[in-house]
Length: 94
Image 1 (cartoon, helix red, strand yellow):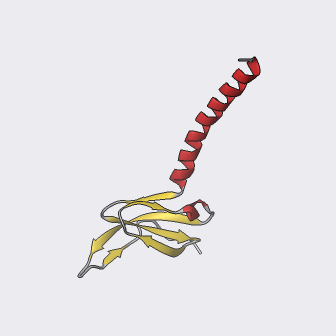
Image 2 (cartoon, rainbow, N blue to C red; image 1 turned 135 degrees about the horizontal axis):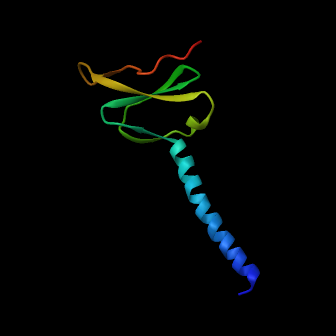
Image 3 (cartoon, rainbow, N blue to C red; image 1 turned 120 degrees about the horizontal axis):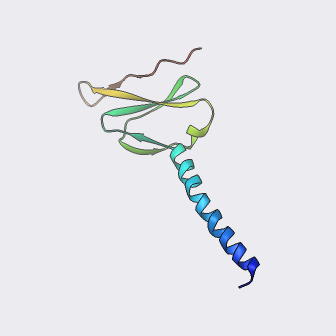
């Protein structure tokens, strides 16, 4: 093995190891975790766009865009199967 091949091998391994945390960070930016008794209110520039109620990880690539926010909200069960969710964060100024 020549020195240029060793350099390319070492550089390739280091570059590959550096990509792993970067990909994990991007993946965490694009997902939202919803707890069992909570909901996540998704807003775009202060306007409610979506309410996530299903527990688990939710895929949301739009979360990386400017102006998109996610706020956790406790959900209280009401009569029937409907739930009422209220925001725990103050509303954005207009």
